[in-house]
Length: 305
Image 1 (cartoon, rainbow, N blue to C red):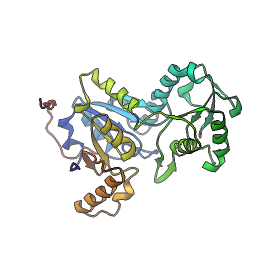
Image 2 (spheres, helix red, strand yellow):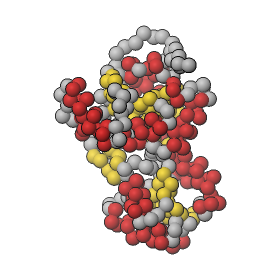
Image 3 (cartoon, rainbow, N blue to C red):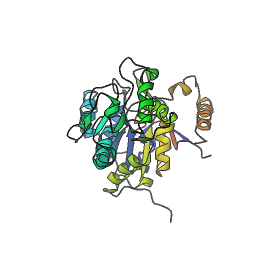
Image 4 (cartoon, rainbow, N blue to C red):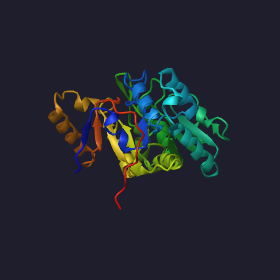
């Protein structure tokens, strides 16, 4: 397996890439506020002309995410574009409208998704009236067992399910919450068909690649920085990108007792084995700039012929 390089900050790798795809939850913020070093690091990338895509599995559209990030102090001048599962699913449903039908039953912790507004779709209150199922998370105060009867009925009616966010866990402050994938996996266990929208699946990474290629930036010129092996590191690796894992998110507990680099390396090895020996290209303690660099223009890496 390839060796992972331990980095002090983003400045260690910034000269090697023109494209940066950044996960949000667990990398830039904890669901409540931005991590302390994030604004400065983003400003440094922007100052050096890097193209920064913020990629989230959140089931909201890019406009709402932009407003949410601004409240945390992450402003539009710090990044190039936002891509969310919510925005992507809107495009998907627009294309699949005829095939799926127009009536959907929603399992989620919200009454409505702004990303659905303007689409010729109707939310129904009884799954017997639905053409397809939308899974966005557990309703407030409910557990998986509470929605199991609905899932069974959906399978009995052969309804296709759309999972708006493939995360199995999410981080809110210091707490871990079950994600929509837990529900979607149960639906599959019952025999249902699920279409997952977001990381680590190919379509959303291809969408990001298409955006970067407009500026002549290709997967080999791009690094994905995330906090999850299953979504960020795996998905980006399959898309042909280098990857960087931060220790501030989902896997923070794996590194919690590490006192030196040898401990960190052992912890990473244990984590890697759990994901079929997948390893990130780089490892960061947190998303920060690190050591100061000269104020110079970036030169693209030369590809070996």
